[in-house]
Structures are given as C-alpha cells and as structure tokens.
Length: 176
Image (cartoon, rainbow, N blue to C red; front, side, top):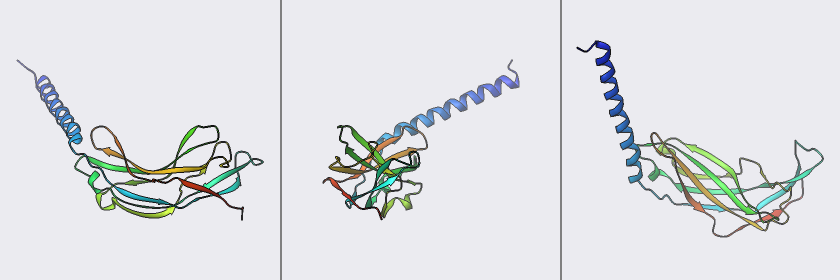
C-alpha cells in the first residue's frame, strides 16, 4: 500500500518530466523559425579628437566620435519563444600592429515587437578609443549592426542585420 507522500512524489515527478519534455520541444521548435532581417546602416566619417584620460592625466589619447543612421525591421525575429533582442553596433578595424579589433559603440534592448522597427540617428554611446592611444595608422573601419535573440527557453542565437560595404575613414579634428 502506498502512503500519501509516495503518491504526491510520483505525481510531482510525472508532472516535472512532462514539463521538461514540453520545454525541450519548445527549445527545439525555435530552430524551425529562421528569419533574416535586413536593414541599412550609414556612417559618416569618424571624427577623432585628442583627449586626456582619467586614468593617466598626462597621457593624451585619441577619441573617435561616430555619427550613424540605422534603419532596420527586426519584427521577423519575434515569435512566441522570443523574450527580447539585444541589438548592437560594432566597429571593426586593424591597428598599426596588424591586430584586428572589434569595439561595440552602441547598443539597445528591444523587448516588444512594436519597438522592433528601428529608425535611429545618433552617435556612439560608448567610448571609441584605440588602445595604442592613436588612430594615426588606422586607415579605415567597417561597421556592422548585429543582434542577439534571447529566447524564453533554448539557445541564444546571433545574427547580422546590416553592414557597411565601403570602409569609413577617420578624420582628425583640432580640439575645441
């Protein structure tokens, strides 16, 4: 004869197994929804200004300021398993030593499909600095608008919505 506790244990084990199987089906079905959103990205030439850093007050480091225009429709990425999107703008360039660098200069979190149509004109949100303190030997840079789909259940997926075809040049400005 079974006690009440063993019956509760059997029922809860069965329900948790059913829940896990349902979550596994949800995670696997997310791979059926493949969307390829497209957008446009236009970047004006990057203005470079000399500035002093807070960490090393005697050291002058160059800061890059990027003005950009983003327009993208990311609504195809939203389906019943999408919790939110993480959208970010990356700058890719090669420094004087030949090292490829990738820097995130702007980001946004999109939580609703109504907010997934992006039309944004702005400038970089984060500091754009070269670690060698000078952009002098960096000829140009490429930019890409990337996204990260965060599901309720399952694996994070990454993608690219827009990319600059032509390299964007650096323009040195006098400090005002």
